[in-house]
Length: 250
Ligand SMILES: *Cc1c(COP(=O)(O)O)cnc(C)c1O
Image (cartoon, rainbow, N blue to C red):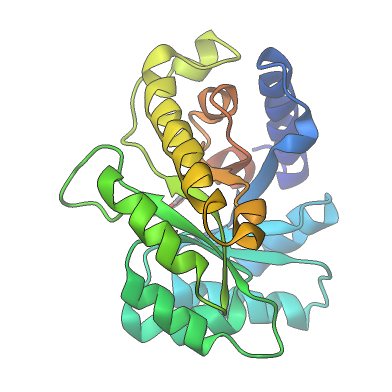
């Protein structure tokens, strides 16, 4: 099995090739290493290879890992919560994470804003959009996005940074065929990018300071990062390509 350092190198090379194919600067896309289900040793190995931004799905697991990383003295880490958050977990998220990608209700946003400790900068948040319209999945319907963006942008403890989505997997081999992904993979990312532009316009009419920081399109995972970059992603969330297959199905 490849080491985490080697896997990071090849993931960065994939990202670079995708940016080149899309005519984009590689500095315009951040790599978030999704370390869920892996221990703090995996985070330490990625850190030693220069990675600083990490994503976690499960709040309790994430908080334990954040504390273990602090105990190891790993510096400069940025922690992103990318999983669903229930009301009874908002205080933990507000106290420990730098980012939350999965806001999909005003009530959760209000609790996070109120619970964000005063000594920390605002919690950076994205709204999660459900592009596939599956009732079982979390995320906002398209029509809900702009109204919620306006409300979240006004909350003092939060900084609204953009949109996130997890499209249903499609055409898993797409990235093998083309450095821009396949059309089937690109379609949901194109839809999110369109909604992102719409939100940017809507926010520009309101508080200018917030509109200026609405700059994050969180889309693309191990299987479709090429397609996401081709459609304008500014942050790809990559787990398996860096850390290997997970033992669970998460
Ligand atoms: C697990 C997960 C990822 C990473 O998926 P991989 O297929 O391992 O790259 C990205 N985003 C979210 C929200 C996830 O839950």
